[in-house]
Image (cartoon, rainbow, N blue to C red; front, side):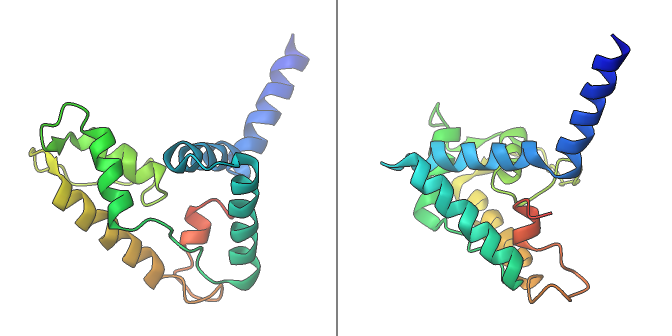
Length: 150
């Protein structure tokens, strides 16, 4: 039994070290969001772009425009209230790779409107892209790194 728990711990450490679960979550989220006709080819193209971003030090292209962000908001706002909860907002940012699980975000107690959601997603994207001037940058917590190119 001890050998099994040791192997499980070893496997868990490996997955955490290489951020495999985050990568799989990101890939699955992108797949479900975009629902491409050829899902395997789509996943391969994402992985190729991630590899290119890692090798070149260039930021991974953020491939969501405002219409995609608005569509994501509408999926989150299934009751058409015009706002989503702070928890939904934070989970969406984590799914998009725009915040980490331990990042502290300020909850003002109000719901997040579509306008605010789009603004914040675009702002966080710009912040990340501003930090991706190359691998030698002191602040190389880039979009590529946040998108699991550890």
